[in-house]
Length: 297
Image 1: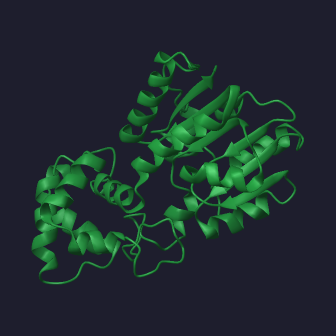
Image 2: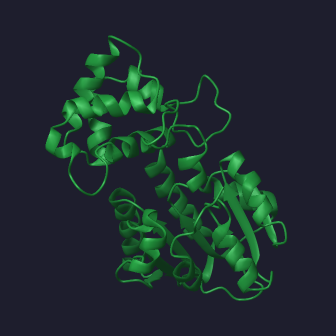
């Protein structure tokens, strides 16, 4: 698994860490940001890494084997439970990198990418039970109105209505099981000019919407921001890297509210974006936005 951390220098600089600090990497992923912290501060910053995906944790452990890090299998919305378990009452900095890990896109086999023919799962969990929500269940069982609402609400997909209608029409003939099944249906539903439009692939927004719904990502983000801010020390920093407008809107609103309440300072008045050099090396970074907030009371 090769994962390239996005906005690495900018995010770690934004954390404003000092030796002896406690840093929470709330979305550990492949461990790239945490590894950089370990090296930069000679293991004199204690790192708590939180990651929900068991397979990714195994890979991160290899990278972080020489680091002063405690890895916890959990979700950052449960940061309070993780810190209570570790006996930690307050922390100096938190990083949330909301992008999908390269492993999840390229190797997990869970249907996150429309470029591979995989089962329609899209869940962050490796071990999936019958009770878990999956993309396949949503696509084959949710009503047309519900599908339309998530495609438009979570994906901002302009053709949400016709895509939802086509899915409901074709699933009567055959169960929709794989990513390529879904891509084919999207292609049948939308105009030819939209398929050929330059920029993002025509299935991107629909896949994004389903993934957000499966993993309840927006509610988790809202809850995680509140809990993370609560555990920050005075002058502690919260750094968030978002990758689509819905996430960034939530982060921007949260940061502004804390600033208006005069309990935090906006370190970034406008988000930091990757430069052309980084985008060329890592095209997946192109939509990233970095925001930084400092707690003051």
